[in-house]
Length: 260
Image 1: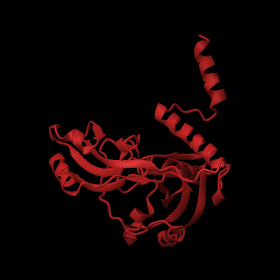
Image 2: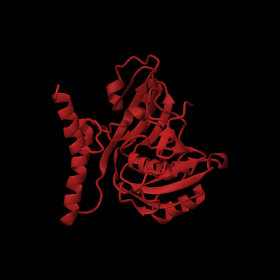
Image 3: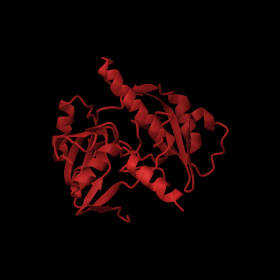
Image 4: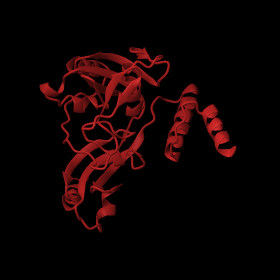
């Protein structure tokens, strides 16, 4: 009878904002600490990841991802496919959403959506090269329109939005992951105390650089050295993704997920 309360009190004491995560979250936290220690000893800034061409394929019931060569013997079935440039170990790939930053590390759309044979044919013809992408101090744009706060966008993708999709206030936030940027802005908008509306936040690992309309924030991105050349992407996402594109801000510390 005492075991369960002991476990709860132990976890609550060790992790007062306790959440259950997988081993990949621990690996990223340890890597971040190692990077900070290296910086103290004069190592250069940055912690790039190696990105390869990855094929993400899904049906209404399941999703899988791997290098295209792994799919050459797979029956096409009813698969919907996209090709992306991504870290093969990124745990966010099953939540892929092309217009938004839904993966943990930078993920670049290459082709799709389409069938598996077409995806393999495109890859065979173009043979895109692997590269490296920086993972720290990234710039994210978040749209707050009405009572909806949308998950972050990459500046180059946001630059493609038409006039009718630019409504509301846009926030430019520097962070190491899109979830850090989104969680900070959501907590700030619902009125949770302790979060800074500008500059470094004492409660979150983010820096709010500015807010205003989209064009103003894109100009600020360019001033900071970000590539704001419009990069059109299709409105496609993994069907079974559990990540909502936006949250509804209710205020007084409350928010929810819209039904549509």
